[in-house]
Length: 74
Image (cartoon, rainbow, N blue to C red; front, side, top):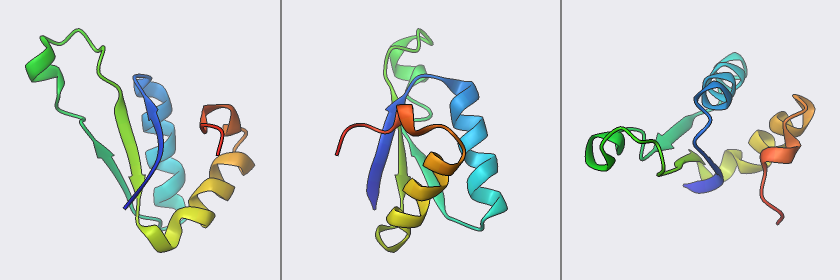
């Protein structure tokens, strides 16, 4: 799996999940349940992960959706 981005923005995560579902792309949000260990403060970012062979399509989808600012510089 490849990491696309890290974020604490739950709205962004929800948007990405919806976008990926529309295109039948597989998305995994790592560290989604870390709030239990951090005391629900939300300082640990969630990692948005995709299957290796879908990385290019996933990045293109994020750019197409106008969310390129959230992708780290490659």
